Length: 179
Image (cartoon, rainbow, N blue to C red; front, side, top):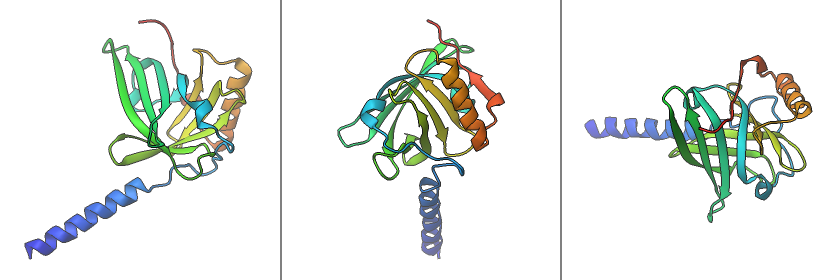
């Protein structure tokens, strides 16, 4: 009897894990960039704005660095300065393409087998500025290769995000200064 309960519990646990790791990675109404080139995307990006969430709470000087791993995945290193705790924090994870490698639809993991959507929904031709959507309407980032973004690009990205349904008035505008 105990064996049957254990097997049932294990089956439910594994099933739940599979469901969680196979969840939708792109919000409704979101179109990802086609003809995406990961080799142009790799390198350092500065976070210009974000919809705040617990892992980036109280962070400024936030950056993301992407590099290719030998196995075809992408190494992700997110870094920021927690101005309340007065210390730098860093998280390393990995990303991989959800389907085609020329689509800006990826999933990223910082916690083992659990992945979250990472969707490049706008990028300029020179790969200097990007608009990223998470797996739901709770996650949005404006990224730049520099600590600023031209006003015309910022406004275009905000308009695109609002058109999808994002509440851009909730964005946190990141400060970049030396610590």
